[in-house]
Amino acid sequence: MQSDAPIGVFDSGIGGLTVVRELMRQLPDEDIIYFGDTARVPYGPKSPETVTRYAHEITSFLRDQGVKNVVVACNTATAHALDSLRAHFDIPITGVIEPGARAAVRASASRRIGVVGTQGTVSSGAYERAIHALDEEAEVTARACPLFVPFVEEGWLDHPAINLVAQDYLAPLRDIGIDALVLGCTHYPLLKPVIARALGPDIKLIDSAEETAGEVARLLTERGLRHAPREDRSHLRFIASDVPEQFRKVGERFLGAAIDHVETLTLG
Ligand code: DGL
Image (tube, rainbow, N blue to C red; front, side):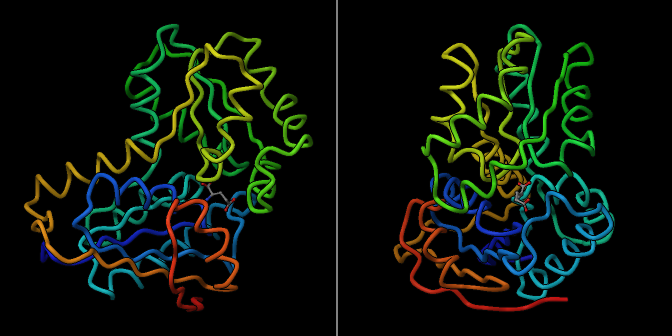
């Protein structure tokens, strides 16, 4: 494995760009190839078998591009497919759930932790398992918030309607006294102000992007795979399986930077 090979990152769509943003901040010398499965988004309501098949197809593609590791920047794909990907592929694979669980356990004093995510992530129980592996006694309450994703995709990040929806989803979590809430979906960090308003100021919001990028940095350092410091700019390559123009437009908001070009590639 070459240290100057790119990092491969994938998500069901554009949401995983929040992880790329953090990778760019923490690992500015690394080249990145990002695949957004915009043709088949959303993964949230799909079966574990289907999501696992998609995740294998994308990881095969990224491996064939010569990446040195793969970051599954999608909570639903991590929940359903991470173990199977790790068993099948001979490259290091990082998911977003373990890092998010670690950050939540660190942040919670009351050990009452809330998790929000897609239907698939919540039904999988993956966050409960990851949190309990770190703290058996923690009380974990998970809730699916399926309407959040379309609001974010639409760019309605502070619309009155999303405030009402957030109140409805989150009031039960607030009322049971959680002190930390894991934003267990790539899209939710963009709704942080709305979520914070619905929960009040005392509940910490855990965004796994930062922790995930930290884990990738540790992994590359341990294996001697960090790209050498460079004078030129790192290379970012974006691939979407459909509607690249929409990916570019909405993706810039997730990435917090301009996206010059998006390739299109259909898998499956
Ligand atoms: N990327 C997905 C996740 O983090 C959210 C969007 C979807 O349902 O595909 O769970």
